[in-house]
Length: 418
Ligand SMILES: Nc1ncnc2c1ncn2[C@@H]1O[C@H](COP(=O)(O)OP(=O)(O)OP(=O)(O)O)[C@@H](O)[C@H]1O
Ligand SMILES: [Mg+2]
Image 1 (tube, rainbow, N blue to C red):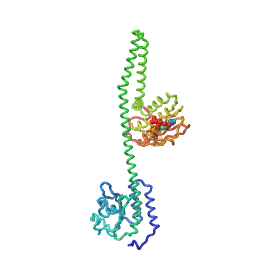
Image 2: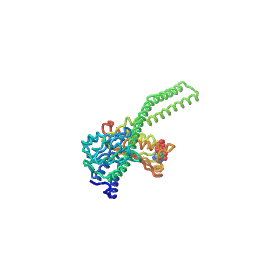
Image 3: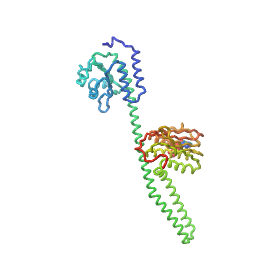
Image 4: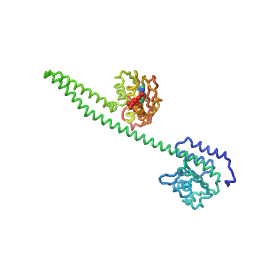
């Protein structure tokens, strides 16, 4: 049995041990992996086979095992210690390590029944802390009494400090990941609700407003004819009637455009490809921009889920609106293809381009919001969006979506248009 003070251990080997744990855990972000690898490294370094890491639940103030080795599942599952109670509870509360030559003889230990069934004797417990806050404890035990030295305790203590920082980081990362997941879920729901609302308004505009406007225009047309038949000579009256008629037609066209923007019927009736084609033709061809399409040869094998279809359509709508508003392009190309397991939609123009690096977020004017929401849409589908542009070099927007959907999610149709 080694005696702590009489056996000054080699400081170099301690440092090696510390850097081994550090190296093993430094690139890990997953808490479970840090705990497991941390414990395995410690047992390896200490030449031990029994140990575990207990984490503190901040709400219940209870410590329980998250990973263990060489202990029975019953022991690990039943050994819950309140902060301040038992050996581990005191270590966690005080932030000070404890070395026991034989825990089975320790009156302050809790659940001595479990300890004796497990046959535990020598016991080392060190706090795992970061920024002065105890996150849990790391225990190493042996079925032989007087197995550990004070040097072992010091070494374990230093390793504990290091693991504490890694655990804290993993917890923060986990919080960040959960926050991101919540944000994504919220964004997904918002987009779905927005889409539903657009569809409702489009339907109402179509069924009510559009019909009423058509009726109005028709009535005005009849009035013009009646005025002719009745031989009304009042030129001002006739001119105003004609103007009112053309105004009704103009408003009707505007409303149709609004309906198409809100929810193009092509998306519901014909699918993604014809809807993108229609959107590009309405907005770009009418401006004299020559649009070439490579949209029909996609062999996706499976049909597209509605969410992907709407997401990609809105993405394309954003890219087309940018070409229309900013590019001064003469030509544009739109392609949809399959690359491996990805669906790739690419919209390119030969216009004036812009410096992408100058646009890091959404500016106060709102500039950047369009590209931001295009990226969000694609990310919500699990994909990536890239915008490549340089002044004078045109712009290329690319969306890549992993084709992970199952046929059950998909609409019963093929992507190449119906
Ligand atoms: N195809 C393009 N050609 C030239 N410049 C572009 C193109 N696409 C985007 N830009 C530049 O990037 C900026 C950001 O585009 P983004 O779509 O995010 O915002 P926006 O179009 O200004 O506003 P919104 O989309 O909300 O109407 C634009 O203001 C424009 O300067
Ligand atoms: Mg825009």
